[in-house]
Length: 474
Image (cartoon, rainbow, N blue to C red):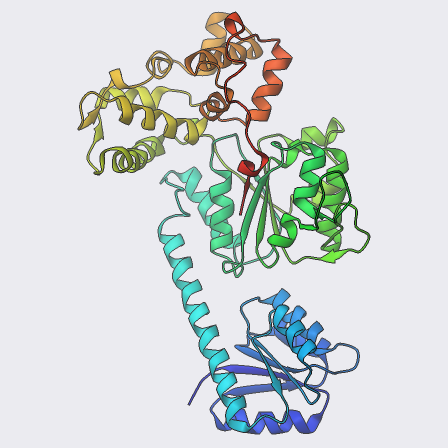
């Protein structure tokens, strides 16, 4: 005996009755409907372990039912049946995600075997998804480390919104862990078996960003030698993180609005819209409401994105988590560089870490610990001498106090800090951007806006360029 809930879709009542009787004798719970639209309504109202559908039906055929079922739950196996077997139709059905293609004249034992296999595959996928969610829940969302009230509130929100398909807008300074939160939402959702795709919208020029997002057709521009799928299509049935959404142009924003409203995309140079089933999560370190007021961000897109906002606190507002984070990164980099998990942070060094303002947030703390592990003199303990001078000297007062004492503007303080980090890295801009906790493209713009020059004109030949693909993760 096998167990499970089966939905049968066929406009022929006799076929529904035949399959229903046969499968109920096998111990299955069976629901039958005569229309594709009714089948999708049943899918939305309740859970099923497999769907059997006729391919030739009026109004909505079996291929459309297949697509609709996969849009609701991509893990549900769909078995296509027809009285008019065709190799071409079978290939189309399998390419669109059908579990199996059966002739209605197939023997009863063959039908039972296919249904049994479908239920077993679905059960394994369901168990794997539950285990994956449990592991993610126990780890607090991958590397989202912390016990402070601020981070607990965020993780509680992640647990609640993961069960939905609602659009999420994550606010937070650079380096606070916006992508980790987006991944945790994906891993805890029913889309966990689908792809998690992310792109840094601020790292690509508009023309390249449009092609990466929506794809392009052959000949649409110079160099387009073949059709290319965009990342929205790659992320179909999964989750797409649009990082640094505030960096997009108004033209790109119009196209993103269409995706949110119509759930379809048009490739560059194309004319036919393509349907996509993607959960969208956007992230930004900008105040988008302010950007809307300034005319830099479309208000209609903002309201579409801001269905459920999640605000990540900066590290300076969750200082109780610094020891936990420092220990986590210490263990990671001791394992990477020394092959063991030994090591601790001296009380004096921890005081310096606790008192520093962390403008680069958790990412900056990670970089500081990695540097300390590499340079530490005592193999068992990180001391103050292993920390960067700015951590030790800057720990006595926060940024606001420093500004008041020096009598300078925040802009000048930012410029000085950028120059300090650039000098420490030999004006290697990509590395400096990592330490500062900002995008390389943002650093380039600030260097130009402040009119900063490389000392002695050196450093122009350094490897500061980076490929666009490095900013796209699948």
